[in-house]
Length: 180
Image (cartoon, rainbow, N blue to C red; front, side, top):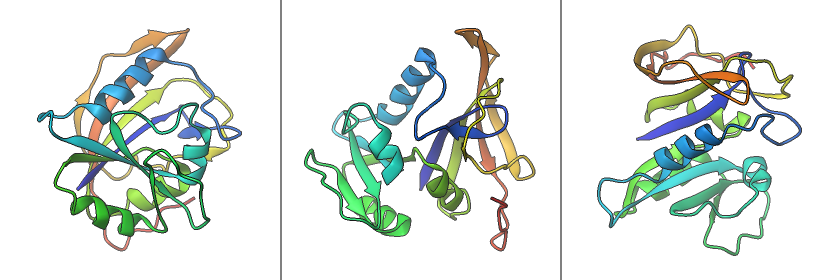
């Protein structure tokens, strides 16, 4: 099982020019808390990301988490990160580790498109920013497939940006094809 964590603008944009076009300290704190929090201090979480997401990180690897990068290219990973060619290969590896409590998919666009259709997806944790950032990378539109909004936060504001946290599950048919 795994969860997705994502922040999007009002048009499902997640990035522009391989970077995040907004600055929300509270959302970064939320991301850190969600992807590092464990119930047993002997455990840690795994995060799975695509190569472009990894390359865009200001600090590598992200601390207190097992960092897994998906890439079909050879990568110079020297800080304990792991690389796999496919999402399923990475998931199968993580499932065999007895010290991993939760697995998170953290981006980018191609990986999200794969992950939202996977049978082992549990929840999507979505920060919806109520503004348009003219993004060039997008999260799939899942509005017709939300099975259950489990948690909606109040609408928050920071840096003149309004945003809301939502946790939901999806009702995806195994034959569903998501538009790009």
